[in-house]
Length: 317
Length: 265
Image (cartoon, rainbow over all chains, first blue to last red; front, top):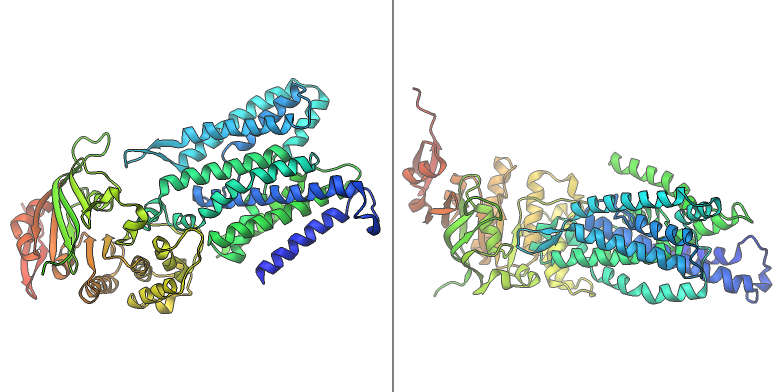
């Protein structure tokens, strides 16, 4: 029943995204219209994959960091990606792939730096990924990248400034069948890695030492989950900018319905995140048509009140 | 017939990086099926270090730590978790969870990566809940449990692993008299009727003396004495290790310790 509801929501979200838009397309023409075929359908599907990826990444990182407030951008990836994107805009790099690639590389550099900072000597003798250090490293790297990014923006022209600003709030206007294809080739690998880690993540919620006693290989688990979740986020941010709140909120909504078992939670988060982002993107396209809002603004406008409500319920029990 | 040797530590030593002295030096212990071993000792005497070593989380600097004849650190963690069930000193509950779900986590070492829970897993959980007398709590939220109930649930989770030895690190640290006694009775019963072995790390000299077959008394990383409670818990040894005057009285055939007041000057 719950799964049926979620599947229904996903179908409704995708249908609305295809039917609604600033340009009016008659029902009869939906199948033939190039606007639908070349713009709306790939955009809706891309939004779904991005939203799902962000939500799965967020749910996994919450378990890994043992922090309910973790989200995909907690670990400095948004800073790195933002710096890459802003650098590409400032350098006038052309072509449809320049911006996503620059953002992706920026995110990877941040990911590598934070990972290296997070590795410390454990008492077993080897090196161990410490979630607390990871968090501090993520904040530090994110802050540094943010500073450099702001420096670049502050000396650039007004038009570039606007582009950079809009990019930072996220958007799916760059969607095409090509980007969708690239993302669909890339995303399954980290997704499967995270799904395979579902059970050990359940155990990790008890703490690292109890998890080891229950038979989880915690050292390898932490690295795998950090890398897979970050690579997932890096891809999402490359094609759509920084879209906040999906990765924080959707996992918590799903926890409320599906409980804490990651075998159900991760797939539910994927569908929920996908549906939510597609709905938010449709709203972003339609609300101030023919202009477009950055979709991150819509997710924040829906997300913040919802999250506040959630926090209240949480602290009440 | 010689009962199965499950845990065997021979002459182990350990040193934490940067520490001045050894955390453990030259300690040995044997745990066989049907044994309840209590590890006693003052704070910082190496109890938890010894347990970590027996569980393969620490590599001995010297000596050997073996589980069923194989070095503890050579075991894949999953395989080890099917032999040793641990109730550690601390754990957290990051997200709200019900008792049954929490005990089901004990089946982790028996489950495959992609497969679901099998009937035998639910059966093992039901059996573990029953043995620890927490079946009635199965649908309660963990955070609504009392301290004593929670410890029994954690013991049930360790039992759901279907291990051959249970290791409990200060399991009654925050429990009142009744819950403390109930837990020790439960562990004793599991050892007697189900052929399990148990290792209990505790501060309670008297409970160790009442319930344990063997006692290992640690003092500053060394073994001060080991053997049956009557041999280990003598007045001279206890006074030396705990640095406090005591009297030892026999009760029910077991030594019981009474701490003395400081003689007035």
